[in-house]
Amino acid sequence: MATGQIFSRNTQALFYNYKQLPIQRMLDFDFLCGLETPSVAGIINPGSEGFQKLFFGQEEIAIPVHSMIEAACSAHPTADVFINFASFRSAAASSMSALKQPTIRVVAIIAEGVPESDTKQLIAYARANNKVLIGPATVGGIQAGAFKIGDTAGTIDNIIQCKLYRPGSVGFVSKSGGMSNELYNTIARVTDGIYEGIAIGGDVFPGSTLSDHVLRFNNMPQVKMMVVLGELGGRDEYSLVEALKDGKVHKPVVAWVSGTCARLFKSEVQFGHAGAKSGGELESAQAKNQALREAGAVVPTSYEAFETAIKETFEKLVEAGKIAPVPDVEPPQIPEDLKYAIKSGKVRAPTHIISTISDDRGDEPCYAGVPMSSIIQHGYGVGDVISLLWFKRSLPRYCTQFIEICIMLCADHGPCVSGAHNTIVTARAGKDLVSSLVSGLLTIGPRFGGAIDDAARYFKDACDRGLTPYEFVEGMKKKGIRVPGIGHRIKSRDNRDKRVQLLQQYAHTHFPSVKYMEYAVQVEAYTLSKANNLVLNVDGAIGSLFLDLLAGSGMFSKQEIDEIVEIGYLNGLFVLARSIGLIGHTFDQKRLKQPLYRHPWEDVLYTK
Image 1: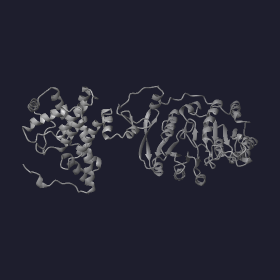
Image 2 (image 1 turned 180 degrees about the horizontal axis):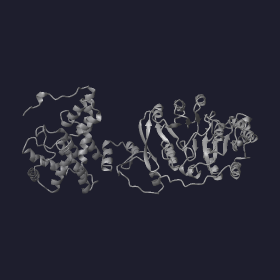
Image 3 (image 1 turned 135 degrees about the vertical axis):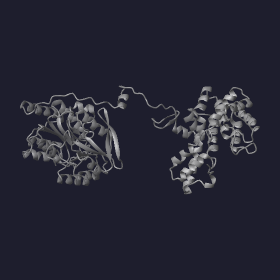
Image 4 (image 1 turned 60 degrees about the vertical axis):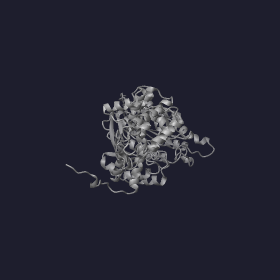
């Protein structure tokens, strides 16, 4: 066990098992104390490597993240404090690994419930190798104005109130981390504040004892008096009694052992800590307080008188000239995190993204205001979900069913079309699913599957303007534009596209109006007079029928319909549908274990 100061303004730590809040509190304390270098040198997060962004004052910094304790110690040889936020299940093993590193002097174990046999092994190893073990079940410790462990002393507001941003003259040690905060505040009110404070932890076998730290404080010239807060249970306080009787402590000690109310209960009482359980008269708070008083410590008659006893002891040292009270200094202001400042109404900040179709902030996600549970309970299908996320409203069932029919009919068109071909070639090159899918999707455009929007746009414009099929087709010809939605490489007057027929049949049965589809059929009749393959294709059928859906449902204004066509909603249907087939082709090639594709020579015209 160390015999003097264990922290300083140059102390650096390794933090095990990443926790954002306690690390940020350590960095904020560093900034508050005017440190130039952050006290957290590195983070150890098993299985992770890289950097973690945090704030040091106004500046954002990147702290290295290591997956192994040995690697972190090697990378940061000046870091000699190991702060262990592992769970009770792994805290012992990771702490022992840290203790065995030559660069580590102090290990703090935050977890409660570490098996006692494991704790005993840690204590034995630490004492044999002159290392300091704080905890288990501790909040940590602090040297005012220099260094603090994790959540010690709580919030920045509490730290400022307790004057922990600059050193005082009092050494404090307690079993309880929660009561430490209370005593930091008490000591700051009646003295010039603490120099160092330690919470040894509330387990039955703490890694270091009250007397260990009192003896350290006794050897530190900056500490002029000690305050000790014990509790009933165990016999740790008696080691301090012996040290006082043996004359090993030369500075005033003000002590109190809490738990005097235990005698009011008829049966044995277990307080909050594992060690706070009296095992007999010697372990009672009354017996310990009496023993400390007889050994020379200043022990008040009650906890309520504890503050007065601390104050009187401090004032005597000041009168004797042994303490020159530390003047107060104004600490720098810690910048407030934006999210907290916004929440408290102190600032307003512009958002970076606008979303109107979904919201995941509540108990369950909502699509256009409809909760996910409601979607399931009402038996909504894919078409209903598309209507909510794309059109921001619940369309009638005949509309959503039409959307689903479009998806089913356009899901695939065999392996020979360009999109499927690209996907197959990519999959056979050993690429992953996303790469194979995207290679196929990238072929979608005016020549393959991407003519639905154009078909809808041109059919709508011509129909709304009252153009005859002759005027429309010949007008497009003069502009040098092919009529979108008309023409097929395989289908013809005598070999109609079954998909188009199915869509037309559904619309005649369910749509209140098919004005735009009838106009498209009239255009087809004219184009067939010119060539046998200039039939209405699936792009033209979906484009014209979607216009009838939008107009006939009565749920969209003319401006909204124009915007839907302009933005590219209808091509989105083809992209969504064809993704199903392209994914299928990818899986098919992977399942068949097809080799790398090479195009045959005989299928290429080599020419000069």
